[in-house]
View 1 (spheres, helix red, strand yellow):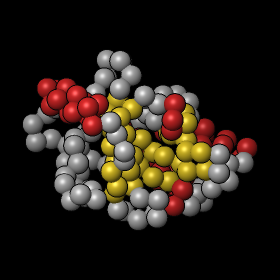
View 2 (tube, helix red, strand yellow):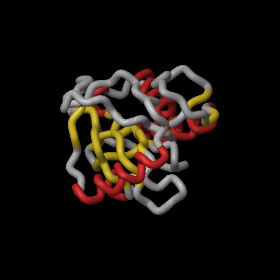
View 3 (cartoon, helix red, strand yellow):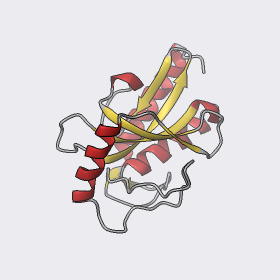
View 4 (tube, one colour):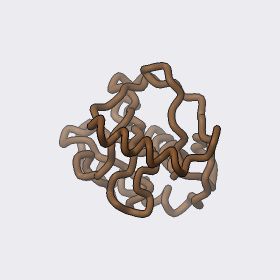
Length: 164
């Protein structure tokens, strides 16, 4: 997708509008129409709004990662919306007020929707030691049995619960 000033402005508008209209509440659903929810709700609503504005589905991908920035949310499993442009991949992230380039985030990237616009998910390259540490830490504060949203990953395994 060519990132024109107008398209960049649309991304900023959607980022700000969704942040202003959703009240945070932990949930296990991916409901783009909900007024309350967590990162899954923010991602779903941002994707829906951009599609409604004419953005091609192939330029929008959901990705999951462990937060690895030393914040109080360290090692929480998180979802964001990736926007693939001719200038690189931008991230619309509910943890940040502004758009961020993919390579500027301190996340341990785990999975993303495939580039082909399908519902297929692929694993992303990640440092094995970092993943092991994140999984161990995540397991210490994950809710038992919660969070499965029905999406299937390339490996066929169920995704982790997304907590924020």
